[in-house]
Amino acid sequence: MLLKNIQEWTLLLLIFGVIAAVGNWVGYSVFPVSALPGMVVLILICLAGLILQHVLPVNIPSVAYIGIIGIIVSMPVMPGSEYVVKWTQDINILALATPILAYAGIAIGRSWTDFVKLGWRSIVVAMFVMVGTFLGSALIAEMVLRMQGLI
Image (cartoon, rainbow, N blue to C red; front, top):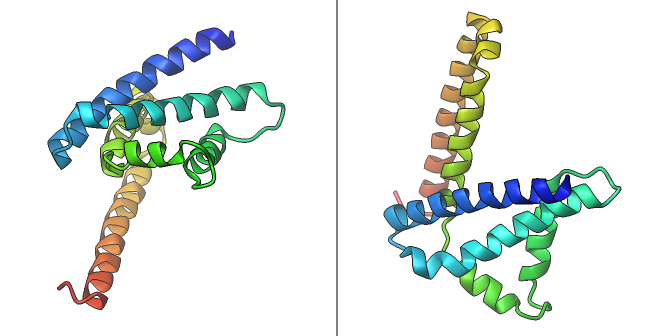
């Protein structure tokens, strides 16, 4: 069972990696070949975290394991950490977020019937949440940029 999960995770992470590499190239002019070592490192860290979550008896989400592994392998005291940092510095976080958010959108779209059952009020609430989040983010960005004297 675990081997099948590992195969599925690997395929999914490879698909995310390719999409993120293309997004990194298009959005941030980082050629995919130069981002490849960092993408491989990130995929391996994610895979290790997913495996640990299923192997260890402690009930901790895999994202916690992934974060801990990422921190450990990039600490200056760890052997090879300078390579991990060097390889991953070419990958922009927004290029990674794009395929993940697209996947979340697809997952919501697959359960659209469940979403519709919530009724029109939930759509109004969701719209207010999105507009509020956007305006709040814009307000914070405006304040920070003004404090830094950039605008």
